[in-house]
Image 1: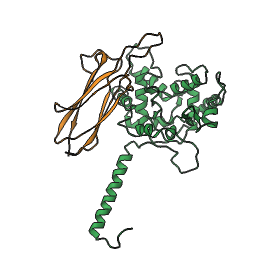
Image 2: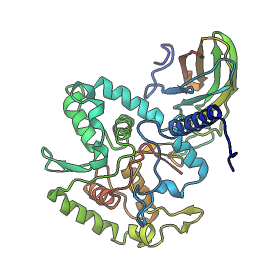
Image 3: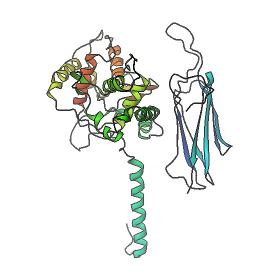
Image 4: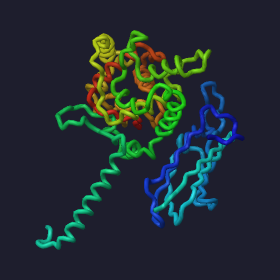
Length: 117
Length: 273
């Protein structure tokens, strides 16, 4: 589940990586990512008028067998539970490693095997 | 249209191509359990429609595609919780159709329980560590996650409230509440969701108020929520005092609303604006 170094979150980190049921060698397909995160902007006040500190996902990186194939920097004003999709082409079998990093020690990694036909 | 003479081989190929195209379409649109319904299955003149039909195409697309539906984060959590706790007694396959018939009469509690209440009870009695006293509240993430996972097993099935005479008084109480004027705005549920359903309140289409997809991922909440939470939203909207957690009035209203939506297909986990 979540990395050991991260401070214990209120609920377990949840992230989903969805690939098409069948991936063809050399043909583009869509990778879809979803992560459970409040994406607190840092610009809001709570019921007591205290500013709620910023708590967002800062970066997502996707590596195909250690080669960086997609990365994104995230900013405030992105809705909670961000959804990210990007196209990808693979020539051989490999592992897609998706890692999330954010404020307050947020970190999560998912590895998904890709077996093109 | 078609050429007068087609070589048999070419015709077979064309047929095969058409058939595989059909199969492809079928595969895209029917992930098990079946996809997203919008209307009553029969082609009758049933005027009832799910809130799905009143949403924008973008929000509909979000619900239609499981990979884009954020509620799936809760479904996955629910699956893990189910396997870790519930699976000791229940099989996930046996949960098919369960959500379609809740709220149902509970022999032990001698009252109807909603699916969420049933999950919280079962968890408190059999799964929670001994000595734990806190029962899962309606908006507890774990309760919502399990509710979503269990209701997913009934997706596409028609809502089928049980024909249990003991529910009748609760249903009547729920209907009375539905038609009761409430709050400073002095509005009953029926005013908006029956008389003015389909018209607009500010920019939004007023849905008929059929609870076909709970728990839902609501974009306004940026999270998952129960029918109770949605009812509280409406009560606050008409400036009435909202129901407390697992309030009997909320349960009665849920019993009535599910019987009012009987026959509409269950959509859990639905997305709503």
